[in-house]
Every structure is written in C-alpha cells, then in structure tokens.
Length: 460
Image (tube, rainbow, N blue to C red; front, top):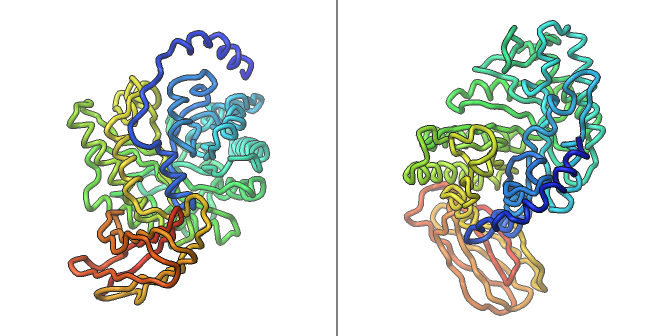
C-alpha cells in the first residue's frame, strides 16, 4: 500500500505542478497565532484529514500544514484500516504520518479508539466474547507498541462513543453503529461498566506510557446524563489504578447552537473536567449548515464556531483545552453537503475561518513569546480577590516600554492602565472595576517581547 502511495505521488507530480496557488487568507495563520500567543500549550488548535491529503500533495494537505500544528488522522489509525481481520495488518497509511509531523512540526492525536469504529469482522454477530477480547488486545497492544515514544505522538483516543442516550452502547444484531465489545462482559460495579473499557485503558497504561489518554464521546450537551455516566466511569477507572488524562467531546452541532443555555452547559462540562485533573478537548468540531450555504448562513455558522472557541479560550486558565475542526475544505471529508469546513471547495477561507482567527487574536496571551534581556516582571495584584479596585504591582529589571491590559472572561480588553516607556524599578497601576460585573478577570504585563499574565477575581 505504501508503494502505491509513492507511485501515485510520482504519477501526479505534473498534475500537482499545474494546480493554481491556493488563496491565502488575510491576517496571520492560525498556527502562527497559537505559537505566538499560547506557546505555553494552554490551548491547541487542530484539524482532521487523511494521509492521502499530503501523500498526494493535495490542496487540503497544504492547508493542513499551513494552518495547524495539531492534527488528527480521520481513519488511518482505526481498526477497520489497520486490522480489518484477525489475519490482516496494514500500517501503511498510519506510518505516513510519522515523518510528516516531524517535517511540519506538528503533534498528533491518534484516533484509534475501541468503539464503533472497528472492523467488520468484530461486528460479525457470530463472534464470541473470547474472540472479541483477543481481537481487541491484539489490535490495541500493537498500536501502542508501534507508536508510543515516537516524536509528535501526543494523544490517543482510547475508547469512543461508549454511551448512547445515557446508557451503554451495546451490541445489537444487524446494527452497524454499535459497540460489539460490550459482548465481552460487564463488571459487578453499580453501573455494570463494560469490561472492554477497563481492558482498553489497562493496555494503554502499560504499552503507551508516553501518550496522553483520552476518553472520547459524542453527545448532545442538553443530555448531560451521557457525560455524567462517563464521569463516573473515569472515577471507576482511576480507582482501579488506571490513567485517564482527558475527556473529548465530538461537537457535531447545528448553526445557531450557541444559546446561553448551551454555552453554560459547555462551561459546566469543562469545569467538571478541569476540577478532576482532566484536559478538555473538542475532538470533532462541526457546525452544520443543513439548509444550504447562503451568505447569511455562513455568517451564522461563523458566529457559532467563534462562540464555542471563545468558551475554550476563557477556560484555558483552569486547565488545558483543545479544539479540532473535523473538516478542512467543503470538497472533502464527512458530510460535505452540510458545508461545515473552514474553507470552501475553491480552498478560499470562509467567514468561519476568520471568526476563529479573530477569536484567537482577541484573546489575552497566556504565553511568553520570544526572548529578550528583560527579566519577567514580578507581578502581584493586591488585593486579590478584590471588591472595587486592585493595584497591579510589577518590577522592571531594565527600562523599557510597558503595556498593561485587563481582559474579561471572553478575552475582551476592558482596561489599558499603562502603555508607556518606564525606567528600571518597581511600578504599579490601578484597575478600577466600577461598572464591571463580579467574576474572573485576566491581566497581562508586556515588557518588550516578554509577557506575564494571571487572574484576578472581583467579588463585591
């Protein structure tokens, strides 16, 4: 299979040379913004496609590498591709990612979960519990052993879509979207947790110690009982001494989803994850346009994407967050007829792209970009929490231009108390919160190309 890829690549060389230069969006590239403003890793922004996109030199692959430092292979690491039958193994497409992410300075989340994305063999209703467990173990051990410790392999979806409508996703005769692994059996805990979930995380803990392990789930946030059961399952796994590093939400939503109620549900879910020392990732971001892509619909789609990303930006101070678009361009990928991509069929950036770009550019930085001879200021807001105003104190090791900004929870600049050249020594500025509501605020102190940021809490 790998040889076929290279033969196709050679055959298409002349064709690729005739492809017109794809239009580049105005403003900074998404990965450049993230690397500049969030190099602390508090938020990662990524996209999904297959190895075909870069192995064949497509425009989709060009956009992937130009815009994203975090990538998710859509199907290349799934059991249906790698291990479609007990006697068949195919690593070609998955292996193509290894050198590619090194060459393009990217990290990967392996989408290779134990769940409905399995081989047809495993879904055969005649399979016994013993056969299924053997098949599961062989596949997941092989994946972990092959890719653990490889540069850029950062995350792995260990299980996927274990819950449907608040109940376990079970094997149902003749049903394609099912989890045949349920047949392996259930534990005797209060939730009768399927044994395959514990087996999968046990294997991942043993054979993938260098990879962060994600519990991935599709679900409607209006039905939080799905995630309630998953939260209980993560506690169950941890009580067994197993490791779970993050929770993923497959956010396939419709345009206009961003109601105050839904955004509150999202904030609640993220807070719950962070309070349990879990990273929170939107692993499959989609905003569907099921009634066509008129200019008005595209603007509404952009607003929905932006609202979701802004919640992640808001929550990155409480723990790590990730966002992964499941669609790069409207000509490729899952359900192209619903236009969920950031780029259209001509590879031109849509309003959704600029909405994400603007949200990232508008957010308070949480990293320390660049290098300089200036030592970071010793910033100490006092008092903190505060009731009316607080003084932001900082110390300069050398003279330089200083900019102090205060942001609300949505990343909007609400005060700029300092923007001037200042001498070496101790300085301070006042943030008066009159007219602003109680809650969390963020500050940045920039001196030259160095930044320090932090939180302040207003409580009256």
